[in-house]
Image (cartoon, rainbow, N blue to C red; front, side):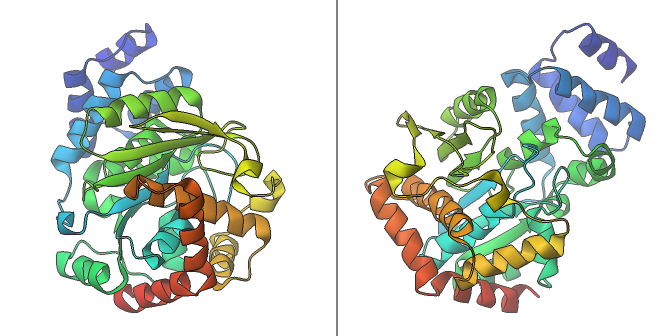
Length: 331
């Protein structure tokens, strides 16, 4: 590791093979926490390259615990995290709205590292038991159109670095990798990023794959569609900047999307949205993210039609019933 760190300190980049080997060594426990923290710090000081990201991703996918859910052609909705906004679990909530609308979802998530509540935190608050059992995951897909994959169970490297990430409490290149290493390799993906360079990086990465995708970024720094500002959406078809008002949404404030001080508080907002008792800002934010996810799947539909589908999933109670069924199967 010493030679690798010196190379990085001299502002040189890793090639794909070096990046791949480093992740393999991390998973094998060959580096101590101080060395891992030093490596992480380098990528806080400069942008990650396409070769480095690709090498890290290849290693994680090679080492993953595989799960085959390809028969469902699912979508994943995920943010990179690391935007420092401490929002409630917007992407996770949107997953249940999309599943409630009838579209298969395979959500890949983890505990919060840079925020109070990650997807796994909100799942645990509701008694969900994480599993790698394909039978349970397929039953969940069959009966409520959504399965949850807790990242550390499916990738040993993510489990090894979890204590370091939690202790640092800052965004790391593992935030960037998480959305790229869903072990089910979903057919569709809506990915939120916290800056424009990452939007371009992910767009380039996805264009080399068979995944149908959209990458979103709110221009005031959110890694999802926050409706606090204009936002950019990049897909395999085009790139476009949207104003919340042109989609029929009121622009909201940052304070209206805060997730609270504890996972329990964030889970309460999650519940309120699905029950239909949340604030307008919380509800609209989830609907917007769900709608753009639906459009990734239904590319022939206008975004207005997709907003209507997402809203109906919430208003009809389908999203909430989907969630209750999910709890029954996975607890």
